[in-house]
Length: 578
Ligand code: DGT
Ligand code: CA
Ligand code: CA
Ligand code: ZN
Image (tube, rainbow, N blue to C red; front, side, top):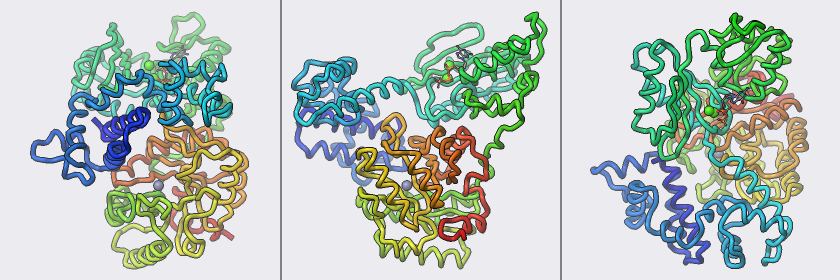
């Protein structure tokens, strides 16, 4: 079990206790435990499983919590949680995911209405009954309705990184099998979507069917949902990600890749084009009008070519104009990960990171980067031991010295991830920010402001002449928290006018900006940084997900400043550029 999962179960139990009106001490201990575990670099599951180790050695985990964790590892829940779940309807856990209610609001609703499901809560809002309760009103009803719609839409989806890891594990498990020519990912994962409904894999080769059996027999497979002559569907792990594996003939492999990569909308448009040109297109191939003679099918390129199109990168296959561009040979030359020369957002042990500046630098150097920026938190995030002005200035000085010696073999830019306070003021005084090479401004608190207030807050932040980039500009957490509302056009227009860059935060639970926002911002002339927000050296590898998002947004290397050489990058920064 992943640390995040342990943390989720603890935090959720704390919320249930709050709904039940229980006392604060244990609630706090579960919440603190959850945040400790979430940020802990080592796997709690591994420590629990190792008889030579004690989970109480993890700072912040006492005996009580240790017993709870042991129980969770064993059966995915624990006594206290079970007890609470008998008190409340199972949907209480879904209620907790609704924006704007919180445990107190839910307790109030349970007190006054006999409802047990999300549908019933939805009906309450439609009937305008929530507003009868204290401190609830029409606005909240609307917010809850929006949130329920969102929840229904995302339920049963998984993070891109999770599906990607499962795909890698499956591919490795099949690697030794004889008579397999290729195992490829298709579907939304190949298109790099931020969340994945199910995982689609294609296998080809004379022995492809054996791969279907091998997947079914994988110990991580929870259940085989169905097995046909050329397809198997399984549920992976306790998380229950569905995996569809299809065995495909060599001659149809390209056609199957094309079809099962999707998107559905792209396929529909492509098939219509094929029909107009006198072809038939399906997952077996591109056929001439008689339906028998194959015009293409072995490779994807062949299919697109026969249809008079350049090959379209999967990330663009959403029927958003890519077919027209492919016809005109005008597709963007999408950025590639190897073009990235540095990572500009990461944390160290100076605040809530898990590795030192030297360790982060070494990991980045090993990835072949030319430069990185260290951007620890600012003092508003007191729990992370955020930097104040004095520490900012000292840090800038330290970095200058480190660079002079050249000992690290990589250039360090001194930076900060400075909180954008409630009113748009920067958390660090301007004269201290002026000492740094790079200032990422991020919103971390008071995210529930009215859209107009949030818009003004961001505009005010942009007025600070030392702000280099807006970090995770919409604050969304995938499958967890929606983007906060603000006038996107207005803020982006101003950012572009002032030369403030926009971040594509690559951490898998953010991917913020989203591809849609990236596309809109590029149209306005925005420049981007794609960065990982790493709190540990291993997080530097998340760059791949940010790059996928950038590609889905149609970005070329030119649009992303951390593909520039160090000199070029340094000159392009706001305030430096003449
Ligand atoms: P997901 O799984 O919800 O994240 O999204 P996809 O795109 O992976 O969707 P999925 O797994 O249902 O289907 C995989 C691909 O198969 C999809 O992208 C396009 C193709 N496909 C599925 N159903 C249809 C269909 O009814 N018509 C066409 N043209 N293609 C389809
Ligand atoms: Ca899929
Ligand atoms: Ca599927
Ligand atoms: Zn950060």
